[in-house]
Image (cartoon, rainbow, N blue to C red; front, side, top):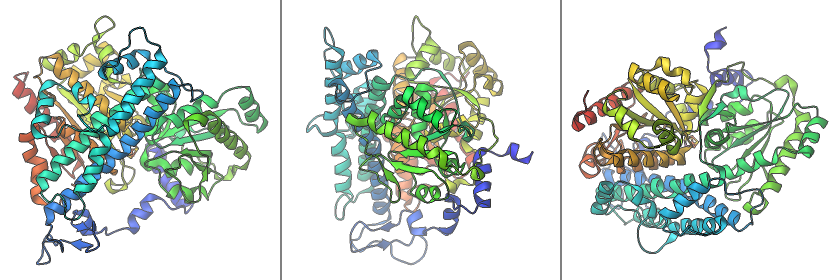
Length: 628
Ligand code: XCC
């Protein structure tokens, strides 16, 4: 009875404790107390004079051996985090661009162009001619142009011009319009080396430029080109939670980020030979389920079930029913190799750039994707017989049905209707006050925030009750999905105005917009809202905000910084990454407002974050003169 109120991750965690299987929560405890210098960004080991520490409180050193002060220490860390995050999202984008070219050339069997309309739209953004040309010819050129964005020697990123004119002017004036993506990452590494850029304001500017190369560069390339290859998300039914794994089925969990692996696994999982192999081992079929952002990608495009978010990965394996957990890159914990030893589960890595000691490796390339996928599926089927039935434990929890798939095109279509898809109705509903504003919740789940928290669920509930439409991505969306928040029926938990809109349009009040690279969808949605008129003329005029409650990855910092640099007020939970440098903290949380019309806030108390977001939205409404 008591278990019914527990979340599936809590039930699984209890079970793992009972079975004496180590989890991230045990390792988190073993790390306490965590290094105070590191937590405050006051440790520098960028050269071998160090490691140097700065004493923030007592009479200890206030400078490193080279003379760098607290602001320089922290600003360098902040810039390196932004650059690393940008590198992750963008290298993912690059892989998708390569796949698009390979597909167009007929060198990637199994893949095809699924969204021709989007292909043409992106071709237009790149000034590529589409009239009277073969689809594959256009696709090849789009892929090649996208690849050029990583290393072109001159000019700024082409997608920046999708932003409102007023925003582009701000970037130009500040000198933060991103040039080639790789150039921004490389320059960030260069500037943060010993004896380089030692002015925290200047370092923070580069953190904006490199992060903009993520949001309007690498992430946007990933999102748009994935839509071309795998389809632009449309509303689709799905399920989420550990309960999506099934006892009598061969379970394959796909974990990581780049959807090309997961898409190939899905493609290769059907057919008479597979059915025969499944029947031969006595299973009822194959379940494919996702974890982390791979789960988001599969869910928003195909309604393929999501097993869970970041902090649920060990728990998913500990159900004892996972024949294979196949991973690509990002957010895959090395600990999985240890967890797998307790079960029959095979952990399979697929990319030469991301191997894990103790895992099996099946190399995965565009040219052999289907073959490799089939090999992995047959491996899973073969492993079914090795399952130890005594160890099987799938939490008897609900697997909420949900509706996902809210790309910005879908939001526009659903709100604007078939005949005139536009953001006009959304803007009108904001102007008339039915919807007070929109909050994007993005990002990770973390043991630092507590054990099996439901922080995103709690925040989303509070926001919708106050007539704020919520758009979710990444593991924040994963938690809201497993928390049952993505159902149109949830409208009853909304304030009266939002309820009316959700009812009329038939959308849930919490919209699943995809993975973390899909935060680029939020940038486009905001740009279109600003261009539509009635709510000012720049993103920073809109009553919108962003929040990440349990940030973990460097990618989250890059996202936060590109949201702010794009004009979106953004609140991060837990701790500030620059807490030991008061001047830098002041720059991020106050001064940036003057530069880019938006700023960061850091707030430990998750309950206070809801109020901060709502106050911000009301303040923007006031400024627009729509405080009705
Ligand atoms: Fe990773 Fe993308 Fe964070 Fe989740 S939200 S923990 S980065 S999987 Ni991207």
